Image 1 (cartoon, rainbow, N blue to C red):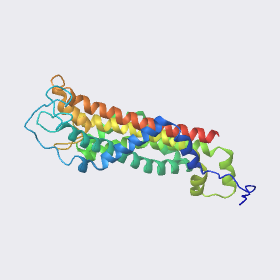
Image 2 (cartoon, helix red, strand yellow):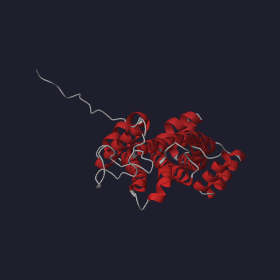
Image 3 (tube, one colour):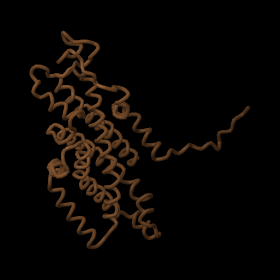
Image 4 (tube, rainbow, N blue to C red):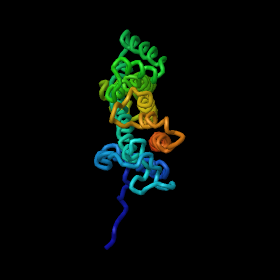
Length: 294
């Protein structure tokens, strides 16, 4: 049977499919994506993976690959006999989970406020513009410390304080990205066609500012991880039985010479989380840039 291919047409990929086709060629970025997914799953299902940190009779047990270690406690135990791996998993849940929650909240609120500010003219836009400039002068960690002192130390208040400290940065980033697009010819053409602000944002602006949004989200997420860990280390984050990576380091800092793994493993975990998500974000950002150039 003869097959006539005369009228066969090449299938045109959507922008999302085309970006994915570029991204999946970046092996390091794809590996970072899967590693990020695993970390998110660990944060979501930490209670099932490590239901409890039972106290063991052996105190300060070293990791199993050291002399005196045990395979029953792969990363050893702390000064109260609690399994270090279980506590580390719960630390990932609070630190990574909190940073993701902050990033999502800041992204939603920041996009709404930033877009409204960019599309608003007159005295309201001027007031918001100068207010953001004033807030950005203060370092985010200092802002979070001031807020946490006002709210009182707790994990919930820690997340609120970090979110409020990072919100002006995201608003400012979205404002600048949209403001730069508003002066381009295709936006002017859409305005002349009678496009509403919502339609302008949805079909004209947001599809063309994906790259700066990814870079902005990556920066907010990284700062959130560091600030949550810092506040936890200083005692303003998780309290009592709650475990957080910064608090794990603070609780074991006195044992750094006798049992350095208790400080080393949480610190390495913070570094790995930031590295993995940054590799994933940078790979995705470069895929978007390459897709726009072609």
